[in-house]
Structures are given as C-alpha cells and as structure tokens.
Length: 435
Image (tube, rainbow, N blue to C red; front, side, top):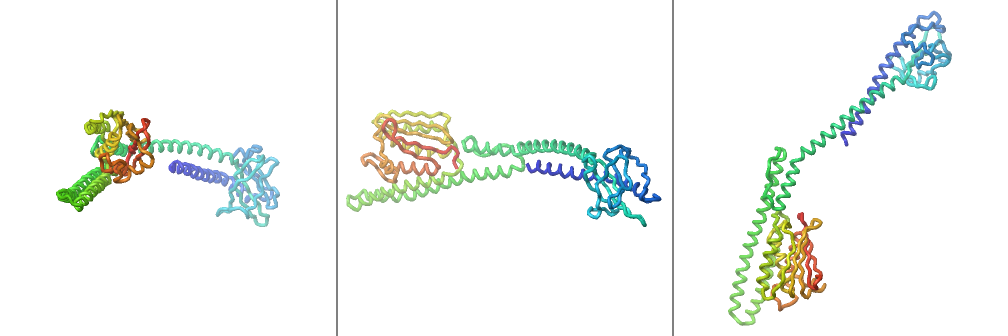
C-alpha cells in the first residue's frame, strides 16, 4: 500500500514538472513574438501609431482564434492590436503587481475573449518622450492543458501498470520467500503430533539458523523433562526408603507410640506420593511432547480394571475413534483416566461408559457409571486432597485431587455432574493445541 501511495505521489509530481516544462516552452514561443513587437515598437516613427509587424503565426490573423497581441497605454488606451482580437481587448495588465523575470517579462493566466483561458506574457516599454506602453502576447491555454492531460494519462497508465507488476512481484516474493516458514510450521505440527522428533528438510541459508535454534530448543525441552524425571525419581527413592524403614520398625511393636508412628508414616507416604506426582506433572507440562493414540491406552486400562474388579463383573463400554490422539505425556493421560476409571468401577453397579472425541479444539473424555453418584457438596469434598467419602472403600483419597492438578497443568477443564444412568459423570477437556 505504501508503494502504491508512493507511485500516486510520483505521478502527480511528474505531471506538475511536465506542466512547468510545457509552460516554459509555451512562454518561450510567446516571447519570440513579444520581442518582434518590442522591436517594431522601437522602430516606429510614431510609437503611438505603430505599424503591425508580420508574424509567422497565422492565428493572429484569425478572428477570436485564441492567439492575440496588443499594445496599450497604462491608461488602457489601445495603441495597436492583432486582427484576431477584432473588437475585443486583452485584460488590463498591472505589471507592478505581477512577478517579472530579469527582463521585466511577466507570465500568467487570465480570462480572455469568449471566456477562454489564455497564457499571457507582457512587458512595458518606455520610449523617450513618450508615454510608456504595455505589450502583451497571448496564446490559447487549452494547448497546454491538452498536452499536459495527455502526458498525465500516459504517466498514470504507466504507473498503474508498474503498480500492478510491483504488487504481483511483492505477492510472489512474500509467497515464495516465506515458503520455508510454512515448512517450519508444518514440521513443528508434526513434532507436536508425534510424527517427527525434529525439524527435517533443506532450508535456505537465511532460515537455517532459525531451524537450528528450534531443533536445539526441542532437544533442550526433552533434556529438561528427563532431568526432572531423574530428580523426582531420586527424591522419591530418598524419601520413601526412610519412611518404609520407620514404618517397618514400628510395625514390630504393639504400643500406642508404634501405632502413632505407623499412622503418621502412612500420612507422610501419601503426602510424598501426592507432591512427587505433582512435581512430575509440572515438570512435564509446557514442553513439546509426543502425540499418542488414545484408544490403545483406554483399552489397556479397561483390561486392567476388568481384572481388578473381576468379582463385580463390570460391563465396560468404550466409544472412541482409533484416530484420536493425545498431545502430551502418555503417563499423564494414563494417570488421569486410570484414576477416574478406577473410581467409576469401584462405585458402579454394573456398567461403566468411556467416550472420547475431538471438538472445537478440545479433546473431550466422558467417564460415566451407574452407581449412586455424588451430590454437589460431595463433589466439592471429593476433589480435596486426602478426602474419602467412604472409609470402607479402598484408596488414599488423592485420586481426584491428582486428576484436578493434572488438568490444571494442561490448562484443561474437569467437570463433574450426574450421568443419565444416575451415577457420576466426569468430563475432561484437554486443549488440542497446548502451551
């Protein structure tokens, strides 16, 4: 747009420069006639009765042709005039109010006979012993206007063609010049969806540094995750072993103190597991990860639940497309779905439903059971860390709180409601394009 604006300004500037050039050329032509008239005035025996000279321009002899000359006194009295003026006169000229050149000649536009615009050159002559006179020569300004109009039309047509070529060349330059960035976008999308580990392909030398830095960033992200996992594993080993020793030592005694130690070490174990799990979640979130097919993960969890709850003979229904993929850490999805499927099977009477779909840039999972369900207050209590609604059921009370923390780490949503069969329905919404 700035280039086109520049071309428009250039067109106006060229037109004005050309108009000035045409006016100078036109004035030079009029000045030739003016000099002839000045010479005739100077040579006349009686300047007040000057004999009209012979000019080469035939239009001076054609009535109202647009080409005129006249000699007049400052009082306006006509001394001599061209035949083309007939009974008309040129506008009075007050050279004291006009801008003149070094020869005392003024050039200007004015309305002449018939209302037509004229280009006029004029100067005054003072003869010894005579009143000064003003000699004026006029030409039809339409000749200038027509010449300039033709030039302006050609210039703007030329600049319009140049602008079109410039726009097309700019579009082609941007389209082809930035094409490597499109390849980078596609490559990053392949990495996010698990089809590639890094950016591959040949790139222009101007883009190669960017590709190298992106690949280095991807490797650095993977190393960060691996280091975080290693540190978390070391911390787990360092804490779990002393806690297990304390618990085992206390279990050899049947005193109130030993029971208190066992109770507190169990609480410590739950807290350690919870915070270690949370540390792993935070370490893994926000990095480039592989995209995993969802159905095999859910089917594997379903087989595990069928074995764990074999006595209840739960009917597990899975409804999810084979193409659905999860962009993130596989163990995070296994932990979320595993906790929810375990809760559903634990409280279900006969049936558990698991479905998944991609919709509006979200990967959505629904886990439903036909159990007793939860009231609003029970739902709020269930997601609190360490809270258990039924002490008779096995568990630590951390499952739903871990699910909540995982969903927050992925900027997802965790919604509980009542299912159509009367039990609990949990909806998970993972953003497909995660940060």
